[in-house]
Amino acid sequence: MTRKLLFVLLGIVLAIISAVVVIVVAPNFDPERSFRDDTDRVRQQTTPSGSTMIGEAAIKRSESSAECSWSFHMDGTWQDYKTWTKVQLLPEFKLTVDDDRQMIFLKQTAGDAFSVQIEHDPSDQPLRIHVHFVGMPD
Image 1 (cartoon, rainbow, N blue to C red):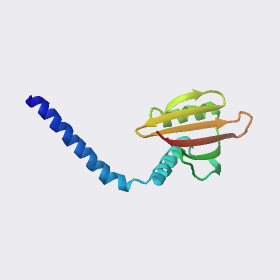
Image 2 (cartoon, rainbow, N blue to C red; image 1 turned 180 degrees about the vertical axis):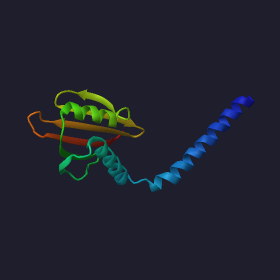
Image 3 (cartoon, one colour; image 1 turned 45 degrees about the vertical axis):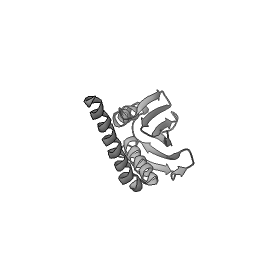
Image 4 (cartoon, rainbow, N blue to C red; image 1 turned 90 degrees about the vertical axis):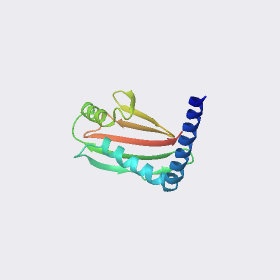
């Protein structure tokens, strides 16, 4: 009986601590800034140094998602880029599509899902990469 009571009390204490954390952290959470920070990080992870940016769209928001895209030229081959990008994104993201024209990475977190779709046209010279990053609440 004492052991059960101890577990019940421990559960209550953990619930109170969780509630306090939510109350303290939640008012400071800014979803706009959070997605912007995620976008900046993914841009760094998918754009090798020495690349030339050729296009970037502002973050677009809807009720169900936020998204951003960018394109760049780079020296090297698609295979070189794929190898480099996998080192940058794995294991944080899961690689779900990997072929001659695109790679798609997915990530699930508590409360959110993210996708990074990376494409190229094999006829483009120099290599032109287009990245589309989407965040969706779970």
